[in-house]
Image 1 (cartoon, helix red, strand yellow):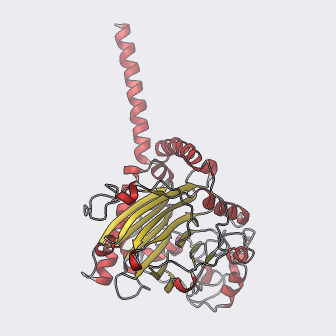
Image 2 (tube, one colour):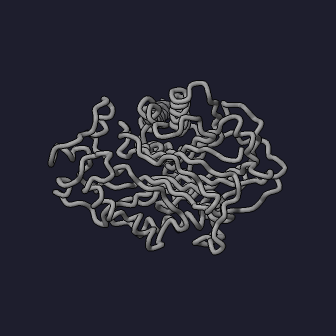
Length: 432
Protein backbone atom coordinates (compact mmCIF):
# COMPACT_ATOMS: atom_id res chain seq x y z
CA UNK A 1 0.00 0.00 0.00
CA UNK A 2 2.02 2.96 -1.28
CA UNK A 3 -0.98 5.32 -1.33
CA UNK A 4 -3.91 5.94 0.99
CA UNK A 5 -7.25 6.84 -0.62
CA UNK A 6 -9.37 8.85 1.78
CA UNK A 7 -12.86 10.34 1.75
CA UNK A 8 -13.32 13.23 4.20
CA UNK A 9 -16.65 14.83 5.12
CA UNK A 10 -17.22 17.85 7.33
CA UNK A 11 -20.75 18.52 8.54
CA UNK A 12 -22.28 20.86 11.13
CA UNK A 13 -25.11 18.62 12.30
CA UNK A 14 -27.22 21.35 13.85
CA UNK A 15 -27.42 19.40 17.15
CA UNK A 16 -29.76 16.88 15.53
CA UNK A 17 -29.63 13.30 14.36
CA UNK A 18 -28.98 13.34 10.60
CA UNK A 19 -31.40 11.92 8.08
CA UNK A 20 -29.87 8.55 7.24
CA UNK A 21 -31.43 8.33 3.80
CA UNK A 22 -30.56 11.87 2.71
CA UNK A 23 -26.94 11.78 3.81
CA UNK A 24 -26.21 8.17 2.83
CA UNK A 25 -27.60 8.68 -0.67
CA UNK A 26 -25.13 11.49 -1.36
CA UNK A 27 -22.07 10.83 0.79
CA UNK A 28 -19.96 9.37 -2.05
CA UNK A 29 -21.49 11.33 -4.92
CA UNK A 30 -18.17 12.89 -5.93
CA UNK A 31 -15.74 10.14 -4.94
CA UNK A 32 -13.96 7.70 -7.28
CA UNK A 33 -15.74 4.48 -8.15
CA UNK A 34 -13.45 2.37 -5.95
CA UNK A 35 -13.97 2.16 -2.16
CA UNK A 36 -11.56 4.43 -0.24
CA UNK A 37 -9.10 3.09 2.31
CA UNK A 38 -10.34 5.52 4.97
CA UNK A 39 -13.64 7.29 5.58
CA UNK A 40 -13.31 10.30 7.90
CA UNK A 41 -16.25 12.22 9.38
CA UNK A 42 -15.54 15.63 10.93
CA UNK A 43 -18.67 16.64 12.85
CA UNK A 44 -19.66 19.86 14.59
CA UNK A 45 -22.66 20.49 16.85
CA UNK A 46 -23.11 16.75 16.85
CA UNK A 47 -25.69 16.79 19.66
CA UNK A 48 -27.41 19.14 22.14
CA UNK A 49 -24.99 20.62 24.64
CA UNK A 50 -26.23 18.52 27.58
CA UNK A 51 -25.58 15.23 25.75
CA UNK A 52 -22.34 16.40 24.15
CA UNK A 53 -20.75 17.73 27.35
CA UNK A 54 -21.69 14.62 29.36
CA UNK A 55 -20.53 12.35 26.53
CA UNK A 56 -20.39 8.57 26.82
CA UNK A 57 -23.76 6.87 26.45
CA UNK A 58 -25.46 10.23 25.92
CA UNK A 59 -23.61 10.60 22.61
CA UNK A 60 -23.88 6.94 21.57
CA UNK A 61 -27.13 7.37 19.54
CA UNK A 62 -25.57 10.20 17.52
CA UNK A 63 -22.37 8.36 16.67
CA UNK A 64 -24.39 5.21 15.99
CA UNK A 65 -26.53 7.10 13.49
CA UNK A 66 -23.42 8.19 11.57
CA UNK A 67 -22.13 4.62 11.60
CA UNK A 68 -25.41 3.64 9.97
CA UNK A 69 -25.01 6.43 7.41
CA UNK A 70 -21.55 5.16 6.48
CA UNK A 71 -22.74 1.54 6.27
CA UNK A 72 -25.70 2.45 4.05
CA UNK A 73 -23.62 4.79 1.88
CA UNK A 74 -20.98 2.11 1.31
CA UNK A 75 -23.63 -0.48 0.47
CA UNK A 76 -25.33 1.83 -2.03
CA UNK A 77 -22.15 2.94 -3.77
CA UNK A 78 -19.77 0.00 -3.54
CA UNK A 79 -22.18 -2.89 -2.81
CA UNK A 80 -20.24 -5.81 -1.30
CA UNK A 81 -16.79 -4.65 -2.35
CA UNK A 82 -15.83 -3.05 0.96
CA UNK A 83 -15.86 -3.95 4.64
CA UNK A 84 -15.21 -1.06 7.03
CA UNK A 85 -14.31 -1.10 10.70
CA UNK A 86 -15.07 1.85 13.01
CA UNK A 87 -11.46 2.60 13.91
CA UNK A 88 -12.00 5.41 16.38
CA UNK A 89 -14.67 7.75 17.70
CA UNK A 90 -13.68 10.87 19.61
CA UNK A 91 -15.25 14.13 20.66
CA UNK A 92 -14.24 17.38 22.30
CA UNK A 93 -17.56 18.61 23.62
CA UNK A 94 -19.81 19.25 20.64
CA UNK A 95 -17.13 18.53 18.01
CA UNK A 96 -16.69 14.94 16.89
CA UNK A 97 -14.35 12.83 14.76
CA UNK A 98 -15.01 9.36 13.36
CA UNK A 99 -12.55 7.30 11.31
CA UNK A 100 -13.53 4.13 9.45
CA UNK A 101 -10.92 1.88 7.85
CA UNK A 102 -11.21 -0.97 5.39
CA UNK A 103 -10.31 -4.19 7.16
CA UNK A 104 -7.20 -4.79 5.06
CA UNK A 105 -6.02 -1.20 5.62
CA UNK A 106 -6.43 -1.39 9.40
CA UNK A 107 -3.70 -4.01 9.53
CA UNK A 108 -1.20 -1.42 8.23
CA UNK A 109 -1.78 0.97 11.13
CA UNK A 110 1.00 0.82 13.70
CA UNK A 111 -0.18 3.36 16.22
CA UNK A 112 -2.82 6.01 16.91
CA UNK A 113 -2.51 9.37 18.66
CA UNK A 114 -5.51 11.53 19.61
CA UNK A 115 -5.99 15.08 20.87
CA UNK A 116 -8.73 17.47 21.91
CA UNK A 117 -9.07 21.11 22.92
CA UNK A 118 -11.90 23.52 23.64
CA UNK A 119 -11.85 27.13 22.47
CA UNK A 120 -15.27 28.24 23.73
CA UNK A 121 -16.07 30.05 26.96
CA UNK A 122 -13.66 28.89 29.71
CA UNK A 123 -12.10 26.72 26.97
CA UNK A 124 -15.09 24.39 27.06
CA UNK A 125 -15.95 22.35 24.00
CA UNK A 126 -18.94 24.23 22.66
CA UNK A 127 -16.29 25.24 20.09
CA UNK A 128 -12.97 23.47 19.68
CA UNK A 129 -11.11 20.72 17.87
CA UNK A 130 -10.54 16.99 18.08
CA UNK A 131 -7.79 15.20 16.17
CA UNK A 132 -6.36 11.79 15.33
CA UNK A 133 -2.91 10.94 13.98
CA UNK A 134 -2.45 7.50 12.45
CA UNK A 135 0.92 5.88 11.82
CA UNK A 136 0.80 3.86 8.59
CA UNK A 137 3.33 1.36 7.30
CA UNK A 138 4.64 3.08 4.16
CA UNK A 139 7.42 2.57 1.65
CA UNK A 140 10.56 0.77 2.88
CA UNK A 141 8.58 -0.12 6.03
CA UNK A 142 8.72 3.47 7.28
CA UNK A 143 5.93 4.69 9.53
CA UNK A 144 4.18 7.63 7.86
CA UNK A 145 1.90 9.78 10.06
CA UNK A 146 -1.40 11.12 8.69
CA UNK A 147 -3.35 13.64 10.78
CA UNK A 148 -7.07 14.48 10.68
CA UNK A 149 -8.64 17.32 12.67
CA UNK A 150 -12.29 18.28 13.08
CA UNK A 151 -12.72 21.90 14.20
CA UNK A 152 -15.38 24.46 15.02
CA UNK A 153 -14.36 28.11 15.38
CA UNK A 154 -16.14 31.19 16.72
CA UNK A 155 -19.34 32.34 14.90
CA UNK A 156 -20.71 35.71 13.71
CA UNK A 157 -19.56 38.00 10.89
CA UNK A 158 -17.67 40.45 13.12
CA UNK A 159 -15.63 37.82 14.99
CA UNK A 160 -12.90 37.19 12.43
CA UNK A 161 -10.11 38.03 14.89
CA UNK A 162 -11.63 35.64 17.41
CA UNK A 163 -11.52 32.87 14.82
CA UNK A 164 -7.85 33.63 14.22
CA UNK A 165 -7.28 33.42 17.99
CA UNK A 166 -9.12 30.08 18.09
CA UNK A 167 -6.74 28.77 15.43
CA UNK A 168 -3.78 29.87 17.55
CA UNK A 169 -5.25 28.10 20.58
CA UNK A 170 -5.65 24.91 18.56
CA UNK A 171 -2.03 25.07 17.42
CA UNK A 172 -0.87 25.63 21.01
CA UNK A 173 -3.04 23.17 22.90
CA UNK A 174 -4.18 20.43 20.50
CA UNK A 175 -1.61 17.97 21.81
CA UNK A 176 -1.50 14.40 20.51
CA UNK A 177 -0.77 11.53 22.88
CA UNK A 178 -0.42 7.83 22.08
CA UNK A 179 -3.41 5.52 22.43
CA UNK A 180 -3.36 1.80 23.07
CA UNK A 181 -4.07 0.08 19.78
CA UNK A 182 -4.35 -3.48 18.53
CA UNK A 183 -4.68 -3.76 14.74
CA UNK A 184 -5.68 -7.42 14.97
CA UNK A 185 -8.75 -6.81 17.12
CA UNK A 186 -11.96 -7.23 15.12
CA UNK A 187 -14.77 -6.75 17.63
CA UNK A 188 -17.08 -4.43 15.71
CA UNK A 189 -19.18 -3.80 18.82
CA UNK A 190 -16.28 -1.92 20.39
CA UNK A 191 -15.97 1.78 19.57
CA UNK A 192 -13.26 2.83 19.33
CA UNK A 193 -11.10 -0.23 18.65
CA UNK A 194 -8.31 0.75 21.02
CA UNK A 195 -7.06 -2.11 23.13
CA UNK A 196 -3.78 -3.73 24.10
CA UNK A 197 -0.79 -1.48 23.46
CA UNK A 198 1.89 -2.50 21.03
CA UNK A 199 5.53 -2.31 22.08
CA UNK A 200 5.99 0.86 20.01
CA UNK A 201 2.91 2.38 21.63
CA UNK A 202 4.00 1.54 25.17
CA UNK A 203 7.44 3.02 24.63
CA UNK A 204 6.16 6.36 23.28
CA UNK A 205 5.47 9.11 25.80
CA UNK A 206 5.98 12.01 23.40
CA UNK A 207 3.51 14.87 23.16
CA UNK A 208 3.04 16.14 19.61
CA UNK A 209 1.24 19.21 18.29
CA UNK A 210 -0.54 19.77 15.00
CA UNK A 211 2.66 20.60 13.08
CA UNK A 212 5.30 18.99 15.27
CA UNK A 213 6.50 16.69 13.95
CA UNK A 214 5.36 17.54 10.43
CA UNK A 215 3.05 15.03 8.79
CA UNK A 216 0.25 14.90 6.27
CA UNK A 217 -2.44 17.12 7.84
CA UNK A 218 -6.13 17.54 6.97
CA UNK A 219 -7.98 20.29 8.85
CA UNK A 220 -11.75 20.27 8.31
CA UNK A 221 -14.75 21.84 9.95
CA UNK A 222 -17.16 24.68 10.39
CA UNK A 223 -14.44 27.32 10.39
CA UNK A 224 -17.11 30.05 10.38
CA UNK A 225 -15.21 32.56 8.22
CA UNK A 226 -17.82 34.74 6.51
CA UNK A 227 -18.17 36.86 3.38
CA UNK A 228 -18.80 40.10 5.29
CA UNK A 229 -17.34 41.73 8.38
CA UNK A 230 -20.72 42.97 9.62
CA UNK A 231 -24.16 41.34 9.84
CA UNK A 232 -26.50 41.99 6.89
CA UNK A 233 -29.05 44.78 6.86
CA UNK A 234 -32.75 44.01 6.66
CA UNK A 235 -32.72 44.38 2.85
CA UNK A 236 -29.41 42.77 1.91
CA UNK A 237 -31.04 39.41 1.26
CA UNK A 238 -32.87 40.84 -1.74
CA UNK A 239 -29.68 40.79 -3.85
CA UNK A 240 -28.28 37.44 -2.72
CA UNK A 241 -27.99 34.80 -5.47
CA UNK A 242 -30.10 31.67 -5.60
CA UNK A 243 -28.19 28.51 -4.58
CA UNK A 244 -27.02 27.65 -8.07
CA UNK A 245 -24.15 25.25 -8.61
CA UNK A 246 -22.64 27.57 -11.22
CA UNK A 247 -19.41 28.89 -9.66
CA UNK A 248 -19.29 31.74 -12.20
CA UNK A 249 -22.52 33.32 -11.01
CA UNK A 250 -21.71 37.06 -10.66
CA UNK A 251 -23.19 37.32 -7.18
CA UNK A 252 -21.10 34.41 -6.01
CA UNK A 253 -17.99 36.11 -7.32
CA UNK A 254 -18.88 39.20 -5.30
CA UNK A 255 -19.35 37.14 -2.15
CA UNK A 256 -16.18 35.13 -2.77
CA UNK A 257 -14.17 38.32 -3.22
CA UNK A 258 -15.00 39.22 0.39
CA UNK A 259 -14.36 35.77 1.88
CA UNK A 260 -12.62 36.30 5.21
CA UNK A 261 -10.69 33.03 5.14
CA UNK A 262 -9.10 33.83 1.78
CA UNK A 263 -8.16 37.27 3.06
CA UNK A 264 -6.73 36.01 6.34
CA UNK A 265 -4.77 33.27 4.56
CA UNK A 266 -3.22 35.85 2.23
CA UNK A 267 -2.28 38.00 5.21
CA UNK A 268 -0.88 34.97 7.08
CA UNK A 269 -3.21 35.56 10.03
CA UNK A 270 -4.71 32.08 10.25
CA UNK A 271 -4.44 28.43 9.19
CA UNK A 272 -0.72 28.86 8.61
CA UNK A 273 0.97 26.34 6.29
CA UNK A 274 -2.37 24.99 5.03
CA UNK A 275 -3.79 25.21 1.53
CA UNK A 276 -7.18 24.56 -0.07
CA UNK A 277 -8.32 23.03 -3.33
CA UNK A 278 -10.32 25.34 -5.66
CA UNK A 279 -13.80 26.05 -4.29
CA UNK A 280 -16.42 25.55 -7.01
CA UNK A 281 -19.53 25.02 -4.88
CA UNK A 282 -22.08 27.53 -3.55
CA UNK A 283 -22.00 28.92 -0.01
CA UNK A 284 -22.61 26.22 2.59
CA UNK A 285 -24.36 28.42 5.20
CA UNK A 286 -26.94 29.62 6.29
CA UNK A 287 -29.91 27.81 4.76
CA UNK A 288 -33.42 28.65 5.92
CA UNK A 289 -35.98 26.38 7.56
CA UNK A 290 -37.90 26.53 4.29
CA UNK A 291 -34.88 25.15 2.44
CA UNK A 292 -34.49 22.37 5.01
CA UNK A 293 -38.18 21.47 4.73
CA UNK A 294 -37.86 21.40 0.94
CA UNK A 295 -34.95 18.98 1.30
CA UNK A 296 -36.99 16.81 3.64
CA UNK A 297 -39.75 16.45 1.04
CA UNK A 298 -37.39 16.06 -1.92
CA UNK A 299 -38.11 19.45 -3.47
CA UNK A 300 -35.33 21.29 -5.35
CA UNK A 301 -34.06 24.68 -4.28
CA UNK A 302 -35.17 27.59 -6.48
CA UNK A 303 -33.18 28.02 -9.67
CA UNK A 304 -34.35 31.42 -10.82
CA UNK A 305 -36.68 34.34 -10.16
CA UNK A 306 -36.00 37.60 -8.40
CA UNK A 307 -36.24 39.02 -4.93
CA UNK A 308 -38.05 36.73 -2.48
CA UNK A 309 -38.56 34.06 -5.14
CA UNK A 310 -34.85 33.36 -5.46
CA UNK A 311 -33.61 34.14 -1.95
CA UNK A 312 -36.02 32.22 0.29
CA UNK A 313 -33.39 29.49 0.60
CA UNK A 314 -31.18 31.76 2.70
CA UNK A 315 -31.74 32.83 6.30
CA UNK A 316 -32.06 36.60 6.08
CA UNK A 317 -29.98 37.42 9.18
CA UNK A 318 -26.72 35.82 7.99
CA UNK A 319 -24.70 36.60 4.86
CA UNK A 320 -24.33 33.44 2.70
CA UNK A 321 -20.82 32.15 3.37
CA UNK A 322 -18.44 29.27 2.76
CA UNK A 323 -18.21 28.36 6.45
CA UNK A 324 -17.47 24.67 5.93
CA UNK A 325 -14.01 24.01 4.52
CA UNK A 326 -11.32 21.34 4.25
CA UNK A 327 -7.67 22.39 4.08
CA UNK A 328 -4.48 20.38 4.04
CA UNK A 329 -0.73 20.68 4.43
CA UNK A 330 0.97 20.64 1.04
CA UNK A 331 4.10 18.52 0.84
CA UNK A 332 5.83 19.16 -2.48
CA UNK A 333 6.59 16.01 -4.44
CA UNK A 334 4.79 13.90 -1.84
CA UNK A 335 1.70 16.07 -2.01
CA UNK A 336 -1.84 14.75 -1.87
CA UNK A 337 -3.86 14.27 -5.05
CA UNK A 338 -7.30 15.86 -4.70
CA UNK A 339 -9.91 14.01 -6.78
CA UNK A 340 -12.94 16.07 -5.73
CA UNK A 341 -13.90 18.89 -3.38
CA UNK A 342 -17.59 19.69 -3.28
CA UNK A 343 -20.67 20.40 -1.17
CA UNK A 344 -23.58 18.01 -0.85
CA UNK A 345 -27.16 19.19 -1.07
CA UNK A 346 -29.06 20.87 1.74
CA UNK A 347 -29.90 18.42 4.53
CA UNK A 348 -33.29 18.50 6.29
CA UNK A 349 -31.67 18.61 9.75
CA UNK A 350 -29.10 21.40 9.40
CA UNK A 351 -28.61 24.94 8.10
CA UNK A 352 -25.18 23.86 6.78
CA UNK A 353 -24.41 21.81 3.70
CA UNK A 354 -21.89 18.99 4.21
CA UNK A 355 -18.61 19.36 2.33
CA UNK A 356 -16.63 16.36 1.07
CA UNK A 357 -13.15 15.85 -0.30
CA UNK A 358 -11.75 12.72 -1.92
CA UNK A 359 -7.95 12.48 -1.94
CA UNK A 360 -5.05 10.11 -2.43
CA UNK A 361 -2.30 10.46 0.16
CA UNK A 362 1.17 9.14 -0.73
CA UNK A 363 2.53 7.00 2.09
CA UNK A 364 5.98 8.52 2.05
CA UNK A 365 7.49 11.45 3.86
CA UNK A 366 6.35 14.76 2.35
CA UNK A 367 9.12 16.99 1.03
CA UNK A 368 8.37 20.00 3.19
CA UNK A 369 10.25 23.24 2.72
CA UNK A 370 13.35 23.49 4.90
CA UNK A 371 12.03 26.61 6.64
CA UNK A 372 8.56 25.19 7.38
CA UNK A 373 8.09 25.53 11.14
CA UNK A 374 5.06 25.38 13.47
CA UNK A 375 3.44 28.83 13.69
CA UNK A 376 3.01 28.64 17.49
CA UNK A 377 4.65 26.80 20.40
CA UNK A 378 2.88 24.23 22.53
CA UNK A 379 1.43 25.42 25.84
CA UNK A 380 3.21 23.78 28.75
CA UNK A 381 0.02 23.75 30.83
CA UNK A 382 -2.28 22.31 28.14
CA UNK A 383 -3.15 19.24 30.19
CA UNK A 384 -4.21 21.17 33.32
CA UNK A 385 -6.23 23.66 31.26
CA UNK A 386 -8.08 20.90 29.45
CA UNK A 387 -8.82 19.10 32.73
CA UNK A 388 -10.24 22.31 34.21
CA UNK A 389 -12.35 22.92 31.10
CA UNK A 390 -13.63 19.35 31.29
CA UNK A 391 -14.86 19.95 34.84
CA UNK A 392 -16.79 22.98 33.62
CA UNK A 393 -18.22 20.89 30.78
CA UNK A 394 -19.58 18.31 33.20
CA UNK A 395 -21.26 20.97 35.34
CA UNK A 396 -22.76 22.73 32.32
CA UNK A 397 -23.73 19.37 30.84
CA UNK A 398 -25.64 18.33 33.95
CA UNK A 399 -27.44 21.68 34.14
CA UNK A 400 -28.29 21.60 30.43
CA UNK A 401 -29.43 17.99 30.61
CA UNK A 402 -31.81 18.75 33.49
CA UNK A 403 -33.13 22.00 32.02
CA UNK A 404 -33.14 21.41 28.26
CA UNK A 405 -33.96 17.73 27.66
CA UNK A 406 -37.21 15.89 28.23
CA UNK A 407 -35.37 13.10 30.06
CA UNK A 408 -33.72 15.61 32.37
CA UNK A 409 -36.95 17.45 33.01
CA UNK A 410 -38.70 14.17 33.80
CA UNK A 411 -35.89 13.19 36.17
CA UNK A 412 -36.03 16.58 37.85
CA UNK A 413 -39.81 16.40 38.29
CA UNK A 414 -39.59 12.84 39.64
CA UNK A 415 -36.85 13.87 42.07
CA UNK A 416 -38.81 16.85 43.32
CA UNK A 417 -41.94 14.72 43.63
CA UNK A 418 -39.96 12.16 45.62
CA UNK A 419 -38.57 14.81 47.94
CA UNK A 420 -42.03 16.32 48.42
CA UNK A 421 -43.57 12.91 49.00
CA UNK A 422 -40.90 12.03 51.54
CA UNK A 423 -41.46 15.34 53.33
CA UNK A 424 -45.23 14.74 53.55
CA UNK A 425 -44.70 11.18 54.78
CA UNK A 426 -42.22 12.36 57.42
CA UNK A 427 -44.64 15.03 58.62
CA UNK A 428 -47.40 12.43 58.89
CA UNK A 429 -45.16 10.11 60.89
CA UNK A 430 -44.14 12.89 63.28
CA UNK A 431 -47.75 14.01 63.69
CA UNK A 432 -48.78 10.46 64.59
